[in-house]
Image (tube, rainbow, N blue to C red; front, top):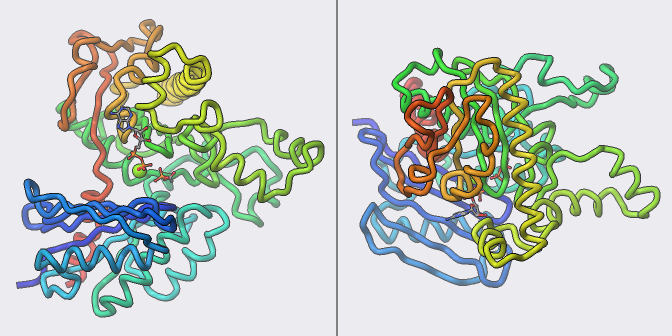
Length: 402
Ligand SMILES: Nc1ncnc2c1ncn2[C@@H]1O[C@H](COP(=O)(O)OP(=O)(O)O)[C@@H](O)[C@H]1O
Ligand SMILES: CC(=O)OP(=O)(O)O
Ligand SMILES: [Mg+2]
């Protein structure tokens, strides 16, 4: 029998999330997370099968290569090592795929070179993704390594949404355009939202709000992305944990000319010291809500700025789509923070948008509606599962090539 297991690696700038799945029944055999990679107190949290005892390790883990080796040890301890003949492939989340990669792709040297070429436009993400692929390849050179790109789902955007209004020749020369990110999540969640409404993806228009540490919105018409808030890089759009999202580009010239900051300093400012953390010192929405409830002014203003931006994108994508069947909240903040969901649609009743307070505060892991029963536009909480989506796409690719 051919192997049916897929290991999924989601390498973030300082974290590595992983899942081992059996694609016969999509069962999770193990899941885990390595956090604070590169710091002295890195932490690994490994959950062997649902219901198994969670194991934690705190030790310095220098880089993503070391992180993956530690993960391999934990899997081996459960008899699920990377040497298993049941492993069919390793699926990797790759954040920036440029214009070239519109589908999941089996990695070879040319693919690696292209992912490397894109590092300047995804400096926080692509290097970690590359290390993950190279380390996995060294551990299992015989296995297909499949790259699943955050940008792929957005390649259907029309030129009117993807082009910036800058000199065409300059834009073309430097491949400057809106690529969009979190596409695996936007694809998965828009399909799951259609299912929740009892409809086919082709028959619904959905606004997806992916609100994690990084955050993005997308407008999905009949299953195809028609606009998204992240751009050339994952810096544009919504207010995020540490990223500014939209600003007047002239802020950068001003900081360089008048503030005498270097380009690298401004890059770090906008990517790592802005967003919620820049506004109030915290990037965890749980902590911000706790401070808001205590009357903390900086946290309250940060929350209001976050919501204001979110509401602007809901309005914009409502206009882009013309008619909207549902708005779906997803990722860490979207799935868990009821006050964010309530505030984001507050006052939008004339657009047919409202949240039922009782439904909004119910917690759970299943996709669910939180709008009143008679709502014209449904508001939904739809947990994302990027790892399952990556595993599904990876397995489909290797199964078809067998
Ligand atoms: N119960 C909760 N209430 C509010 N926010 C939460 C809750 N749980 C998680 N979050 C938020 O989710 C964020 C992480 O989301 P996640 O989708 O895991 O992000 P990423 O994949 O970018 O690391 C955290 O920064 C935190 O603010
Ligand atoms: C593209 C991106 O912003 O990803 P993340 O939210 O994982 O940082
Ligand atoms: Mg994420």
